[in-house]
Image (cartoon, rainbow, N blue to C red; front, side, top):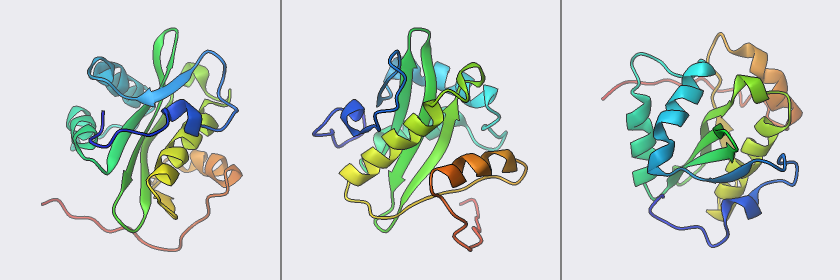
Length: 156
C-alpha cells in the first residue's frame, strides 16, 4: 500500500460503471508480475523504464499509488496516480486487451480520479505517447482536452 491509507476503500471512490465482477484496490506485492504482464500486453512498457521499479517507486511514495482492477482471473486494469503538489497525474492506465471496450477504462479513470480527489487534487493531467493516438478519442469522451503544452524530460 502507499504510505497514506485511504479513509474510504478505493471501490467507494470509483464511478458506478465498474463491471460487477471487477473490484478496484491498491496494488499488493502479489500483483506486480500481473501488472507488468498487463502493461506489456497493452504496449505501455519501454526498454528504458523498468516497470517493476515504477511499481515499487509509486507504492513507496506517500503521494502516489498503484491502483488495480481485479477480476476472477486476476489483474485486468490499472492506473498509477500521483500528486506533485500542484497537479495530479495518471500513468499506466491499462485494460487487458480481452476486456477493452467494456467500461473498465472508464472505471479505471474513475478510480484514479477518485484517489486524486481524496488527496485534495483539483487538476489532473496525463500524457499520451506519440504513436498511441488511437486512445485520444477515449480520453476526449471523458472530458480530457489538449492542455496546449509540450512535456520535456531528462534522465537524472
